[in-house]
Image (cartoon, rainbow, N blue to C red; front, side, top):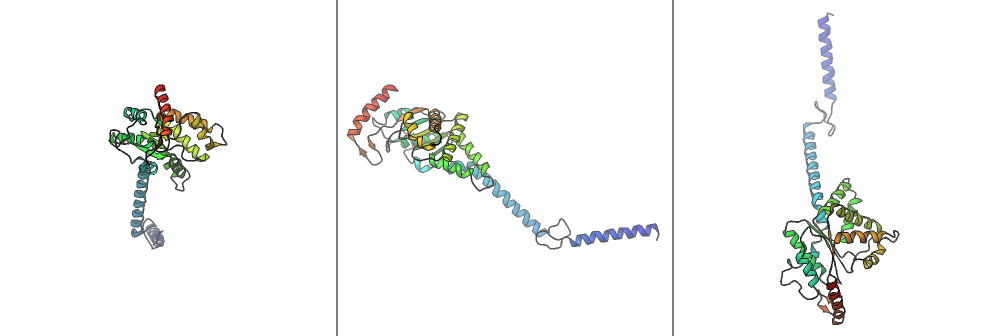
Length: 287
C-alpha cells in the first residue's frame, strides 16, 4: 500500500470513529441522540428558561429580604393615633404636659426616650405623633413590640432557608441603621434566654452605630426596671443589669405620662389623681 493510500485510509478511519462517537451521544435530560454539546436544542432552551426563572426569583427574594425586616417587624396598628401633636384630638391636660413639652422639642436624630406610665396613660399616643413626624421628614421608622422583634430575629437566625444567615445579617443591619426604632411595651413579654440574647444583640448594634431607641413601658428606669426584668435571665445574675444599662444609655431622657385612670376607656380616679399630682410636681421640680 502506497504512503498516500495509507494516509487516506487512516483519515477515513478517524472520521468514521468520530461520526460513531457523535452518533452515540444522547441528551443528558431526555436521552435523545444528539450531535452537539450533550443536550438537545429543546432541552437546552427549557434549561435556560428555568435558570432565568431561578435567577429572577433569587433577585426578587434578595430584594424582599433587603427591605423585609421593616415589614416583618413593623406593627402599624400600634401607631393608629392622631397624626400631629397639634391635632385638636391630641390629649392636652395637666397630666400630658411633661410629655408634650418633650415631644414638641424632639426631632429625628435627637436622643431617644423612655416614655413610661400606667396602662392607658397616653404613652403610645405621644410616640405615634413623633413617628408620624419622622415619616413625613423621610426618615426610616420601625415600630414594634419587643416580643415581635426578638421572635422575628430568632426565626431568621434558625430558619430552614439556605440563605437564612444572610437574611439575618440584613435584618440586623436594618434594626441597627433605622433612624427611629420604637419598642412598644418593653415589659409586656416574658423573654427566654435566646430572646434575651437577640435583644442584647440589637441593643449593642444600635449602641455601636450611635443610634437611639424610643421605648414605652409601665415603670421608670432604675431599680424598678432591674427588678421588672430580673426574671428574664435567672441563670445569669448580670443579665438584668446589662439590659438595663444598655436601655438606659439608648433611651436617653425619661418622659412621664402620668394619668389617674385609662384614657381609652374614660376611667378616672380622683383619689389616684391626688397622689399623682404630688408626683408630677416633684418630677417638674427635678426636671
